[in-house]
Length: 235
Image 1 (cartoon, helix red, strand yellow):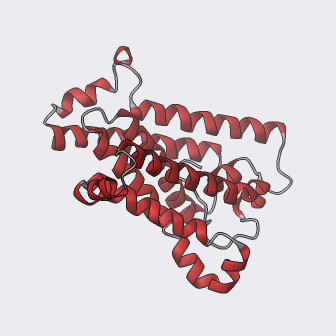
Image 2: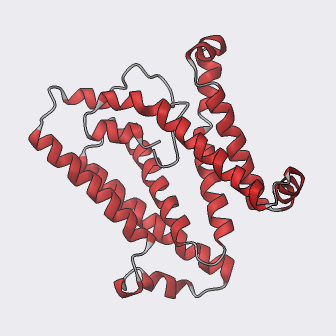
């Protein structure tokens, strides 16, 4: 999911070639994650399966892995040709659902301390907001991406407040106030700002040092018509 925004921001069309490898790496990690869970259950597939059925956060995690396996299994050129563009595109659009399921899995299993999960959710929000803005503007340069980052950070902070306030009973005002007290640690919303601003700044510096021959190249995919089969949660 992050490949397209980075490719456009940095005018780096060849980055699209890394999608497949990044996607397969994400699949490998997901399968390894599931495998370690089976090991934790005493190498018992029966016990692991029972836990997956009984625990909702494990169920949605398993669904995400199953969908990733489907994407990985259809990532080869021969399979793509046999499926046809329409069916292949429809299947691989599920990468968005996979990302949401993965974040939900992370949030629910984190229980009280959801800092890392909210941060990852915030980075996913950046990618979604970016796509919405690009859909209407057909371009997102460094300055506009910085704006996308601010909006996403605000949504991240609101999401964190809502999670604690609605699901844990923690005073939401205390959670909101913690975002403005750096001595308590860097909040998920702040991490989103740091990551987004860093990316926008790096893209701006690159454009100053290496001006693109044609600005339009940043908004045209390199021979890709649809969501990549291997778009990842963070890559």
